Length: 383
Image (cartoon, rainbow, N blue to C red; front, side, top):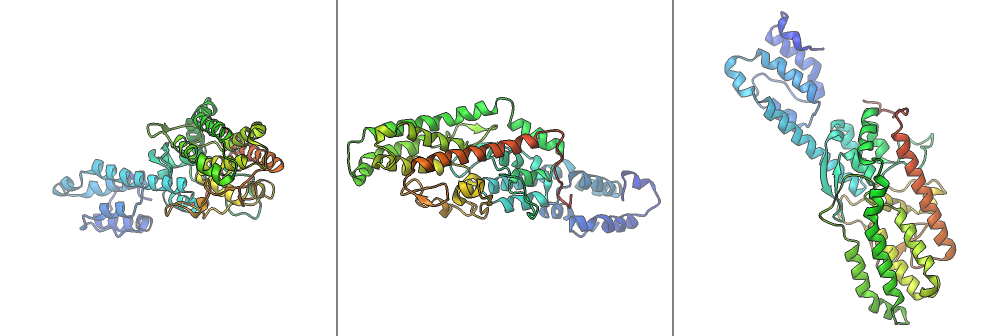
């Protein structure tokens, strides 16, 4: 192993070069050539971001350079600034994958370069929500935790928080989570979701006042109310989310409870007005959820919580609009089994609320476990 004091021994420059290549070139995947001034650029292109190691090696080489060459290489500050930009670019790409629900792609970037999990980035999700944090923190804020304990036959965790956290020191996991889940994070999340609650209340009250009888006529008379709801559910572009949940899935249960509390005014579960609320109110709300939770809804809440089935994580938005959303909020919603529904009944409504609560408690439990200083993350084998 090369040490910083190596220049004091009797090795020649060529010996140093040979040792340098033999010990570190494989890690960098570049050919080290004292006559090639593009090696630093090559390191950057290869996106090898072990900053301390590179710095130590550069200092060793720097000590052996003649004075006229040092002027060319005496740009370490610029080099590491550029290196930081590369790392931040990768961190942004990782966060984009997280927000798109592309779990495997996000994890692959972290496996290749774990240091990106220390870089804070700011970006918008598919709906325009601005969110700021490290990739690991963003995964936590979109509530991408394990949905249950891993089965013995499963080779990896379901949640991206757990998968990315395996590439961080235990104390860093706790530090980053405490930053985005401070003591008042639940209050902050509730305040952020209040606009959704108010929009749903307004939408339901507007439906109650509709005079039309046929469903087609209700659709026509209620169209302006649907547009108002869409507008109300649009994220505030001036708000940057730095703590709590980006979207709390429990609001779906609140929507069902709101419907249940106003059944008499709507004409019961089987009424046309209730159907209109389920499709457009409940359905549009589903289009607003985080992609990782949308994957769960697509698999079916019952199948995930009761039957312990893992959702398909390849259903993502990395390539643009996903077919998952086709028709949701327009002609149907996703029911408790992940099927296309147009109505809720008394039994399915209460079962949906129960399953939502179970999912919420399961994820909260995983968050608390991760924030417990006594716990130990399983490190990836290659780290």
